[in-house]
Image 1 (cartoon, rainbow, N blue to C red):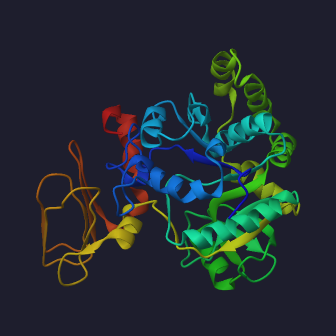
Image 2: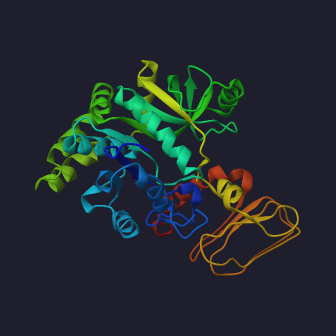
Image 3: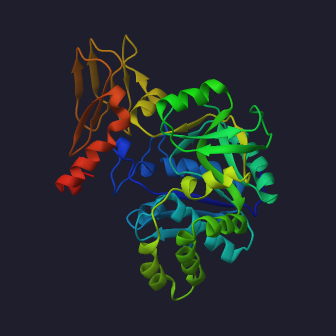
Length: 368
């Protein structure tokens, strides 16, 4: 187990557009029970992280629309450790705010950041891997936890490693490449020299903030000013004034890619049953249930499903309260909610977010 002084941050933002219409801006996927149990993705994440640190060192960074839901689902989380963003500003701002607030309260602390919407099946191995990443962070490295790729996925980042992956072995990251093209991702996977970036980061707060200041002062300057006012009567006023000026950028682009090029990033390979619940294809593969001959699948988001699949193959159904029936169709995703129904070919699962963009352009904001 890691030391109790480890500070753990869970960025809980976004609306999960690839899981629309199940996931919405006001009720995003991390608040849903998509784990095969009655625990939400966020609750399952904290169940996994709680043994790694002390309760007062667990944090969530979330949006104003989600703060009440986070507090309701995590009643043991100290209220002062729910850091609320007035506006979405991508992962760099969220993680940097947490790092700066933690550094103010505990200068030079080791901090780990883990997404709120991932599944992990081997908690013991996960804890062991985190402990090795903490060792590297204490030595001043910007640490990641890498996952052995199983396919040429274009939605993930890739870590070019200095040596073949070995359990518990810290190794330098030669290149940090976010979301490559299909051809490039295929080449990476075939080479055997790359790991997936699972957005799991471990570092000393002072080291990360120094790198952020050097590489993206336009992000660092307002964040550090906001953190200086944190836990004071001026906190809300300074946050409201400066937060809109923080640029939108992912932490991978802002810090990790250039830092890796300078030899400052390292990784520990992780093999603990990691999955990113990013789309319905993944959800069906992980938690689907056979509903008849031909490998037909359905997924429920809670409660009992009423699904009939006839003469079809590879159908994923996410039902609400009504009967959902299919006849003679193959390889479809069907999502039924109280106010919207999605029908999509399985090979277009990654493109569902385009529908939310169209709805936004049309002004149909109640549906997103």
